[in-house]
Image (cartoon, rainbow, N blue to C red; front, top):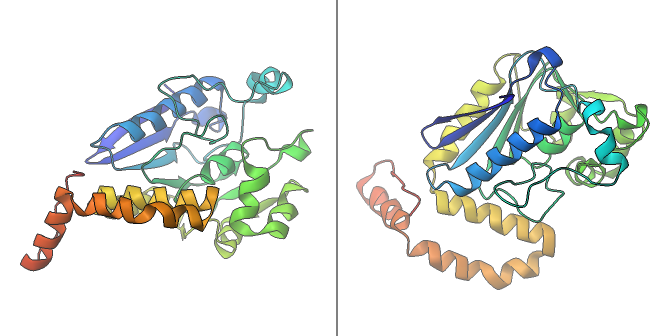
Length: 260
């Protein structure tokens, strides 16, 4: 397997594991990653995901020899109808309901940037080099980079890199708000796991509804959220976790949530 799945408590770790090829993504790797996102979304005991890569580089990009015919025929990404969630969030409206944290290092090119744009928290080692290199290879990004990069770092910042194919550094990414933490090389996964444990200790229903509310606003605007948010809050207020949260406050102890 070139995508490995591990668990630590309520955390699901998704490991990109093709280091000899600089973690270049094949179609099979895409399918494995899509299934991992689906598993994270559907399993009640999994509350947060961490995506990271084995080796000195997160990814050098797509294995173009494996993808050229798919893109040439306007097929897009080979998403199955069942048991998969597209990690690019391009092939369907389905999104993972659980938060995802990315930890990147070395080269983080093309698909690495585009899937990272769908993550909720992003950590980069200081040696990370980001790049949407497609215009230097004869085509252009088709996994969400053309519109999500501008959303996250601003139009002109995004066009400066999309139109030139130039790389940018971890420090640049932090300055523009693309990543939330920059660590020493080799410490990026440690920081991502620290954050994941904090998320996993929070109330899962609250966490998932934060994502639901924010994504609805992004897609349909604030008015759509205002129409539904109080109904969602009322449901969560009736949960066992809400009772536990109140009781832990009274007893001055750390709450132990169950996601119910």
